[in-house]
Image (cartoon, rainbow, N blue to C red; front, side, top):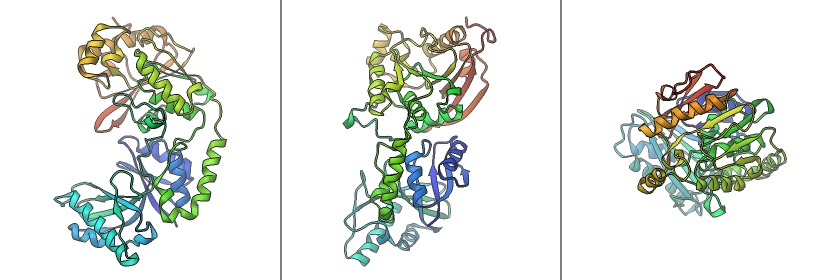
Amino acid sequence: MTVSLFLPCAGGVEPLLAEEAARITGRPTEATRGGVWVDGDAAAAMALNLESRLAQRVLWPLIDGPYRDEHELYELARRVRWGDWITPRQTLRVDVAAQRSPLKSLNFAALHVKDAVCDSLRESAGERPSVDTRHPDLSLQLYVGPEHATLYADTSGEALFKRGWRDERAGGVKGEAPLKETLAAAMLAAAGWQGREEDGALLDPCCGAGTIAIEAAQIACGIAPGIKRRFAFERLLPFRDQLGAWRELQQAARERVHAPAVELFAGDVSFRMTDFAARNAANAGVGPAIAFKTADALQRPAPAERGTLMLNPPYGERIAPKGSGAARAEASAGGAREGFDGGGSSAEFFGALAGHWKRRYAGWTAWVLSPEMKLPSLMRLKESRRVPMWNGPIECRLFRFDMVAGSNKEAE
């Protein structure tokens, strides 16, 4: 059975995801605001869950149609053959997203859809399923517009940015305000960095919990992003006869893992964060692929003749020199975070960072993700490209700076 799968993604990532989905499925894709459509079957849904680095979820359409109120949403949901998807002994959850909807309560809409599923199964099987808001067997996503509604089954379960290696129960470390893996992958995709020999080395000098470096290392080693986790479709009835094919997909992914063709470097001014990142890399299966070093980004020399700098700049403890009393005071007052505060200390840091790059990183290309639209002027550098991206609700730009010796005015 072929349907129009919907892959939601962060704003600005749509064209990158369209290319990725076409590569994974071999089928045409259509980018739209907030996601990508791709025609696919159960095999395509499984492959996308396993292989997509950019999608947030893989949604399977169940039904759509016009509506005016919650009662019509109930009737719409009653038309689905729910006994084909779950048994009464399984659990469900309903989430609702709206855009210019006339509904007064999205929770009330979710309740009506839940009632439709439960009433349907009670009539067909004599029992009703339970609700589990944390780990449901069937997670439903309802999208309501001004007059039209679409109901999807979420084949992913947990969001796809959860690769599995950050799980604290398995030794992973989240860190403060960690960058989502899907956004790190989007930064690498926008830069065209694929871990090929011609791409050169990669360095994140402000690595935090290591997300960018780990995502890059998995790309360089051919490791599928979903290889360490479970997915909702493994518990859903339409996929039960596909589980053999699913094991074959997983095994094929494991067999293609290889040593990286490029060098990967990462580090942080904070010993604590460098240690967190190294532990996460080991948990992700790429510990030997990344050379970690605790170092000040303003002093660290280029580890290779050419390469790519890729970073989501921090502030606070992680941009101050090691052992700085100011850093310790700021950390104790509010904690270090990944982001940009627009304050004087950050402006000084970025100016100094640009000066260091001009002196020590000629031949490198730097990609910097920041919500500060005036970042090029703060760094006294001319960007060669700026890519709009959203970090959750925060509008950002991914700036590209080409570090050519003698081509930029030295920072004062």
